[in-house]
Image (tube, rainbow, N blue to C red; front, side):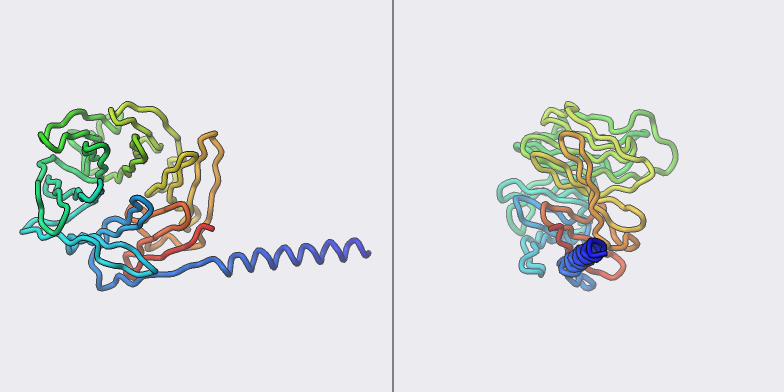
Length: 280
């Protein structure tokens, strides 16, 4: 009898510890209802940036609020899809077949690139994925920003896609490599700077996946799991772990949201807010 009581006591203590951990998990939000349309939240060099596509401005999240980081002046066509930064220079991909380059508030150079969507800058070379199909195919393209020449293109689907198809490819850089989330092949693909495929991880085709965080030992990717936002972590040795944020996926755009080593930044496009949830 005493052993049973002791067992029940420790089970109760363990349950209280779990409840306590869940209750103390930090969940905050930033109101963006009057901010404009957010097309991307991205971590660069340890800082989290937010792209306001409506005003063509980039903001930084500091102390739980948004601060203006860079605001460029664009005449006319200005719907920005994505951005990346190398040193102090920002590269913006535009829906009008343009990539703007700027280190301040004015556009210093413009690259003419057909159909750009996601963008990554690596060793002074620009990489973009296709926003829509080109003769049935999506591509990742490597471009020299000085000459505007396309140095290499790689197809991201094996067979031509028919009809009205809209796929959202994720493109991320880590050190000297690029990682693509490929929804058509339902896998992560890692490329070197010469766009040679070096590594791949397959996923369930029934699930929806979003943006990624890449480190030396693993890849984290946002996904929808049982109508909630989860983070799938894939280790280099093949092990997989799933972390449930407890946040409903209904209004969350995981293709614009961000996952880092310590938190997720989820864009709720209906209520107009960024939900910040610690992963500790």
